Amino acid sequence: MVRFGTDGGEWVMATQAHRSRVLLVEDEFLLCDMISEALAEHGFEVYAVANARDALQHLTCGSPCDILLTDINLPGSIDGAALARIARELRPNLPVVYASGSYSKIEQLDAVSGAIFVPKPYNPDKLCEMLSEMAAH
Image 1: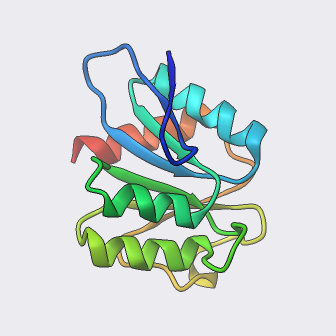
Image 2: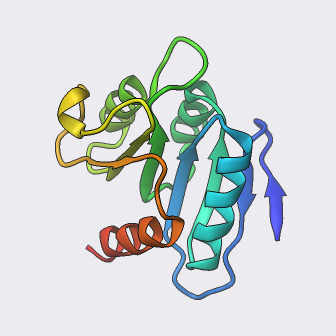
């Protein structure tokens, strides 16, 4: 089941009992849709947006979020690295996962502490396994 948020985001509801909430920030529509579906199939509740502004709106309105999964290169004035820093100011314990096809390792970023980096292209099932492990801790 897909439900659209008021700010243009898209909720993908999982059908399994365990539903960690992932805020997915990805501007490539087809990739965003594919990852949203894979995450939902693995039991995650996904709120998907295409830019940092919509992601920050989601975080500042108090919506639940257990993991931030963000692309680095985003449209607008705030990229994924800056988004993660702001998100951590709002929610200091929020786990962050960066994804990028432009970077090859996390050391190339101004990453928040404890973040994980996933280079694109990535295997959606492996990503879901990694996020499941993160959610369990």
